[in-house]
Image: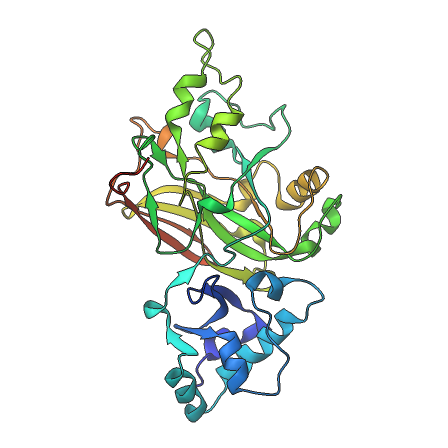
Length: 339
C-alpha cells in the first residue's frame, strides 16, 4: 500500500502551516504525516513551483492548488526510497511530532458572524422563538493578534479571566476577491473550510444590560474588545479544500470541554445559510484570497448554561467538524506580571 492510498480519492488536500521560520511554511497532511510542500518540490523536481503561503496556494489563478495536489499525489505513490529520503531531510514528518501554526496565520480579514443558530440566540434570550429574527445578520472582526494554531495555549487574560467562554465555529476560506456576490454564485468563491474557536470573555455582559429590561442595548464595542485578547482565535487544524466536502449543510460541529460535549449541531440548522451569509457580508465588505468568514456558533455556550460553565486553567477545549478534523487547545493562566 502506498503512503497516502486512503487520501488520494478525488484529488483532495488538507493544507497546514508548519511552524518553521518566522511566518511558517506551507504543508499538507498525507496519512498520519505532514508534507513540507516546498522542500518536497525540490526533491521531486519537475513540478510547478509551490507558493510560499497557504493563502497563495488557495488563490484562484495562481496554479498553487493544482501544484500542491500534484505533489501530494506524487508523494502518495512514491517509492520507499523516495519516501525515506523525504523523511531523512525533514520534508515528511509525523503529524504527532510536527508543530503547526494556524493554517492561515495572518489573514487580511476574519469576519466572525454572530448568533447564527436559533439555539445560540436562546443562550442569551431564553424566550427567543425558533423563527427568523427581525434583525439582519451581524458580525465583527477578529484581529490577527488573537490567532493561534492547533495545540497552542489559550491564555486567560488577567483583566478578564473568570468568564472565558468557548464558541466553536465552522469557517469558509475565500479563494478570490469577493464583493457584491449573489448567493447563487457564492460557493464558487470558497476555497475550503477551517475551524475557529471564537473565545469570548463574557465579563462585559453584565455591564451592558439595561437594568429595567435586561436587554443589551449598546454592546458591540465591548463585545469586540473582549473577543480579541491574544490567543482568543484558535484556528485549524487545517484548511480542507471545498471539493472534499460533498454537502456543507450536512457538516456536524461538536465542541467538547474536557471531553464533555457542550455544543452539537449540523450546519443545516443555521438561521442564514452559507451562500446567504456570503451574499450579505460581501455587499458590505470585500473579501480577498485567504480571508475567513465564520458561520457562527451553535447553542450550548458556557454563559447560556445553568449554572454557567467557563473555562479554567488546565481545561482542554476541542472543536470537531466532520471531514475537517479537531481543533484542540489548553487553557493556561496569564504569565506572571501580565497586564
